[in-house]
Length: 342
Image (cartoon, rainbow, N blue to C red; front, side):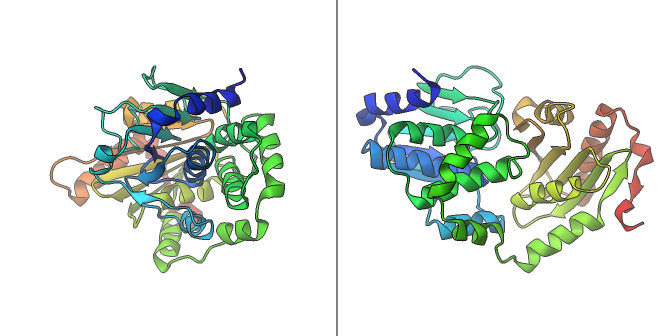
């Protein structure tokens, strides 16, 4: 049985036991996580008659992500403790148990795990599909959807197309030919006008100010560019700044941080696959569960326990930056502050 058919067979055989199903992307879902959850809900509800709901523990913050949810009318709830009493089974999408970026309590075992990120160990879930050669989790869900030979609704195809594009940086980080083939198969079913509106949304003044602060605060040592954003309105913007800074001429590594709800959120980007971004960031934070990623991208969050002060924030930012630079063979003392303004 092909990998893409395994999920279909599993859901078909277990439809009664799975219902109702709580579908959980990571807490601050990006387009890939949102599209993957949207696809699983379609499979569950429309193909197999499994009652299902999408819920996440954080917020949808980045303007593109909010535009995606609004334009495609993707119903998502904010997770509450009551959700865990109302659902018979749970699915984790674009995340895994033990990762620090989802709100599934440790006492619950998910029935389904589908992810593209490197696993930290084995899982007890009934169905596990983890493939870190895929450029996006959306590819794995799209392949399962295509195996059903069901007509693909335009809104779902649009979501999956954008999920693949956003996680592969417009296919430049595609993990395999399968990523590209899946994208090309879905594209004729997508609403390209809606896709354009999602990719170019209206932005708040706060989000534009954060992007400006990311450039203003940037520092460079050798071919590594770092920017600490301070307090942010949502963690999504941190990865957006990292992507932007990596486009700076000559840079191989971009590292950004942002303070949000007593956690320092991190984003790491590599220009080439000279190292595993996930392994590098886990080494920097010194905690396997506080960071993860795939290929050339990684993210994580480090909690700041106890009394929160500016001094403690700055100490944590400096400590992590120094570890990163040393891991790359550089000297933190050689940072050129405000290098982009010179």
